[in-house]
Image 1 (cartoon, rainbow, N blue to C red):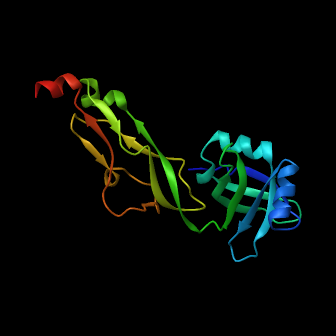
Image 2: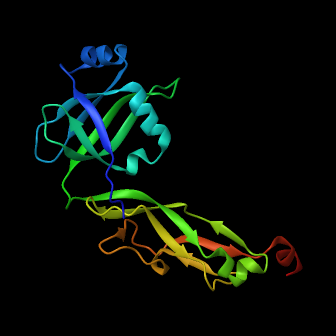
Image 3: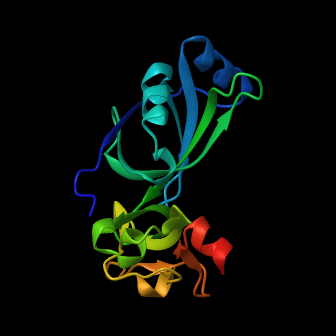
Length: 195
């Protein structure tokens, strides 16, 4: 489970609207808004280089942050959208949503495959075909799993791994109700040609 919640440092943005947002961008900030949680929206600005570093680190949209804004209580937030410049693909605006520990949210969680060497299908030349490297799950904001683990021990050629075959942490459910495929073990190309 994700125990350490990273901090996201921001400042209160004075003024709202296009003019204030443009002024923030001129001063090397990315304007944003924090909404939800039964409170009024809070216009913020995040230092441009700091935000870019966070975005390049990856998983920004599926990470729970502890938002630190001077003069306000720390609050847990999750990013609900990053608007980007059409040409330069650089961030121009950030939407953050306040969460309680008990809030239920939908996130894409990374799928990790273990015990490759204990799979007879892979040992005999089969190939692991990953259909979904990430799965969308409904999770509690206080207990966001870092990853979903799929055990490949004992898997043979032709075996298909569905979402219901994977043990999920307590309280975590897939957002799609059908039993979708995560991965399968395909026969090596030589074996397929013979058959």
